[in-house]
Image 1 (cartoon, helix red, strand yellow):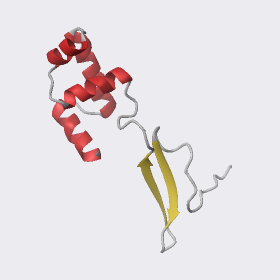
Image 2 (cartoon, one colour):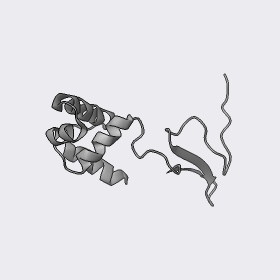
Image 3 (cartoon, one colour):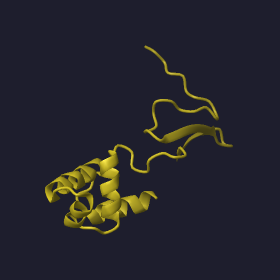
Image 4 (cartoon, one colour):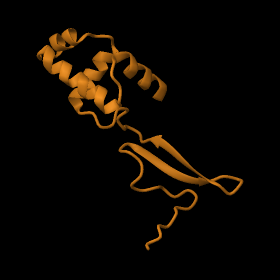
Length: 107
């Protein structure tokens, strides 16, 4: 059986944090360890989204409808609907209001 070495105080935790997030283990005064996570500078606030999905997300967050987004981006409404559905799926939500609440909570 292979034992994994636990990271010590101030050591970065490798391979556990999602893209764009750094985690550091810190020893607290009572001898416990805490993992502190924070976004790296310039990291995407929406990891896992394509550049197109991030652009569509910005328009969704601005209150635009699928039809308005399609007109602005020069694509079909159905294409935008598919992109919005993909954004919902990646965030684990099923509506614009859930998405907005989730992103506001995480901000």
